[in-house]
Length: 208
Image (cartoon, rainbow, N blue to C red; front, side, top):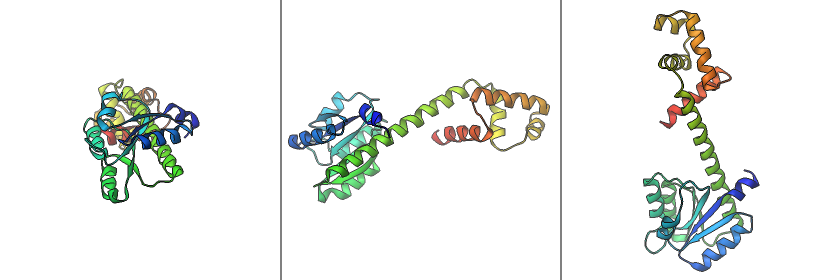
């Protein structure tokens, strides 16, 4: 992960303890990352704009909606923000439950500053990876939309490992026709090799 990725990210701190919010804000900003802090989950939800780059740092136990309930709320609305959960010693089982709701790390109080910063870096790197995967997925979907029904059919058979001759026999056309279809599929999908085409198709299938 590059420094520019960190610089573009925002850490959203959600904690009802003002002293903790101020301390976290100072610590995170000291490594060049922007911070926005919120006194409650409801305050965060009221002000958050989906699609922004960054991660959550939140306390498990808060009055009103807890950190765990906030993660569950976000997951239900398909708003996946990587989260680092801060927990007291007695809250470890709750923190593990939070991990199952989408948190990617939890830090026990009292925590080491560098351990928290490392967790934040991992969360931001994870979010960048997810964005990159989503962008690539959308590009592949866009390319697929330009295939004709016959080209799509040929592509499916090609990526299943069938030869031009086998596909030609199945579709009742010449091998030369299949070669032409296959060339157009490779061009439209911007695939440099059969292996790359297979990877694209598998990636789309696994996310559907």
